[in-house]
Length: 441
Image 1 (cartoon, rainbow, N blue to C red):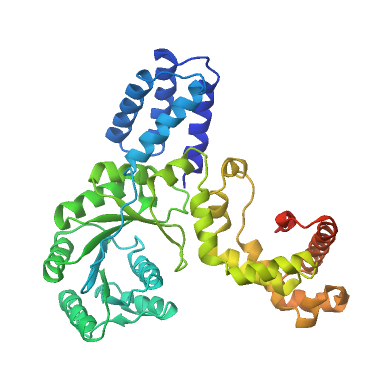
Image 2: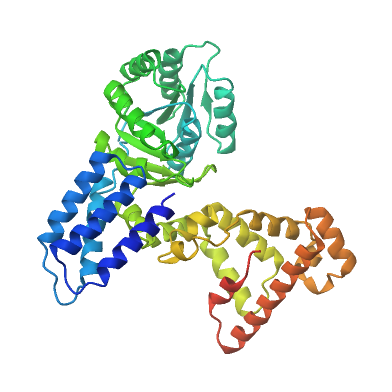
């Protein structure tokens, strides 16, 4: 989402990096350009104006010390102000130390609210919480069924009733949780295509009835300033505790994400980068500010890797690399691990300096799907010993995987080249960088 904004900011900051010293004129010229960039990105006008005023005041009042260039100083000031704009520091959701934690989720229809409920349930379940989902969206066709399907995928039960009474569902779900040993209830409330008085009254009544530990507002960050306006309306009526930004993997300009915290005055607590149950991250202002300025987000990347990789399997894999015994079966396991971490584009965006370089490069997650299909169409013997893959076998694999013979040939060839590199490393002292040379195309 922030690639275009990041690239434009990087171009604007390059101009001041070439200056020998900071002056009122070169600061003014650079920040005028940055203000225009923020407005083009659909950042709220008042938010952009205040942001530039704060940066200007700090830049004019700062002295460039010998070890820091003007460009480094202005970049640091902009980073600090971006971090402050996004909330300053990470804010956790509230969890009751004893008794039931009730989380009420509100938002407009189509914002990703129901999907978020399941994602949050999965995250809390991983933290040893016993979670119950409550289907209080009784109006949208198939909303209850959608929540049940999502719940079954992550092994979290869903509470629902036959009656179309959202308040009764919410109240009864708490009673059910108490009786059955659940310590966390996530209530998926109804949304509308637009804000109306009836919807606001219902969510207000539910909040008064269940007195939730935490009320979260889910907003589609692709909707720009409309997202900010709906957040303001919901907060005036419901007084929510935190914001969830969904669809950050989209191609919108990103203005809503940068504006919403400053306009509403409530912290962003979670961000969602995809549709998979695991595509939910805690929100850290400094990490997003770093990504916007093209500095990547190595901490989040490492955290994702730690959550996904099994340490014993990693050690076993390293031994296979050293002995040059890495086969297609092992490769298939690694593809599945990478897919769990998220989309390739989102992972590349976390690597410092890489997002701008990869801007025009094709990053297609379907490439992994194609490789996975080809390997899955091989027999166990073929995966262990690719040398037996003759013409007839390759034709069978291409038919079974829905790919061309050329695709199969390309994969086998690249895998062979990787093996040659590993063989050289195993003789000279193995380094794990060889796997990074494998091309997914």
